[in-house]
Structure formats: C-alpha cells, structure tokens
Length: 109
Length: 109
DNA sequence: CTGGATCCAGACCGATACTG
DNA sequence: CAGTATCGGTCTGGATCCAG
Image 1 (cartoon, helix red, strand yellow):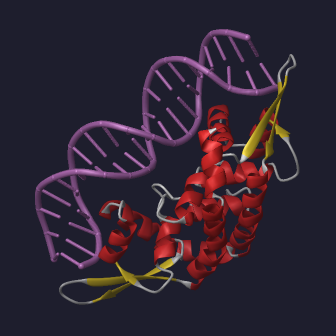
Image 2 (image 1 turned 120 degrees about the vertical axis):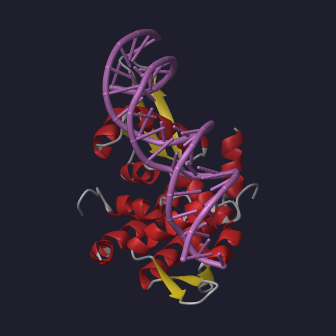
C-alpha cells in the first residue's frame, strides 16, 4: 500500500477532492458533457472541473470520450471502478442528508 | 439543506478534510489521548490535529473529555453520529484496499 | 464547445517556539 | 501533556484571456 496507512487513506486520496464525489454523483444517470457537468455543479469553475476530471481519469474512475467533431463534443462517464465507488458513497450521502438536522444542531450549539 | 446541493455534498464537508476520516478510524477501538492520536496518524502535525478535532467537535462527530489533571489528560472519542459515519466509511476503505491493484494499474497507465 | 495558460489572493499546512 | 502563536512557504482556486 505504498504511502497509505490504510484503505481509508487511499479512499480519501481518491475522492477527498472538493468535487470528485459530486462529479461521480452527477454521472450516476449516464454520460455527461463538460459544460453540462459544469452547470449541474454550479459553483465549480472550468479550471477546477478540468483538473478534477483529469485526476479521476488518471485514477481510473472516469472515462473521457471525445467525438472528433467540430464544434468539439466530449462526454465523461464512470468506469466500473467509479460505479463501484459511487455505490458505496451513496449511503454516506443518504446518511448525511437524513442526519442534517442533528448536524445543524451540533453546529449551532 | 442550506448551501448543500445534496447529501454527498454535506458528507464531503464533514469528512473531506485530509485527516478526518482517519481520525474516526483511529478512534474505532475506543477513546484516545491527543498525543496517542498524533502518533497513530504519524504524519499529522499537532496544529492540524487540533484544528481537525475542533471542527469535528463542532460538527458533533467527536467528543472531547478533559480530566482536570496535572499533567493534563484529554481523551477524544466518537459521538453516536461519528460512529454511524465511520460504519459507512469502513466499506469504502475496504473497497479501496481491495481495489488497490486496479488503481495502481490505472495510475501507471 | 472544450479546454490551456497565466496571474494573483487567500487558504492550507509544516516548523518552531512558547504556555499552563 | 496538550495545546497556542507566529512565520513563511506551498498549494488551491477564481478570474481572465486565448486556442483549436
């Protein structure tokens, strides 16, 4: 496991980025184009989106498919690895949403 | 959900920090003292550890108990919320560890 | 449309020294 | 032991302009 102390360490490295988990989430219903992703994520800049997508490609979580067209059309989709990871992340998101009141309460205490 | 676009967004905010998931992990077998945590995490500085623990207290994930002793003794433990979250994070860690070979392969490709 | 390149402010984080 | 305070370098991330 190289420099990782445990699996969780590696997992944080894979999706700890500010946008990566959300990118997977947005891809849950199928491939999306670059600008479509950008609109879905609203607050992400093109620069960040490019950067995070590149890292996720490099980690084997997403796939980039460029149609060789003009004007350009590029679609991003999840790999098998990405889909597996998202499947584990969904319960975390559901839990967070369900416990939002508790978290709010803790924060305002 | 205030500024959060979905539950996953909130979850990333809760444990997206570089050390938070690992702190929960280290607390899985019971309360730990400040320096003990620091040694377990190895590469974390006292400053970072303090900071992340504070945020996690504020979010209701960990509890800080100070025995009013000299020399000081402070123990950190998980709240119920923290334990629930860790339970969901463990499969993610297990998955990452199991798929480490695939990830390595993707990275070196 | 899908980016790349550059600039810049602020956040992040490690090292060090200090306190109760 | 369990932190706090400060300094300074690095990295993040937004804004802007440019290219194929």
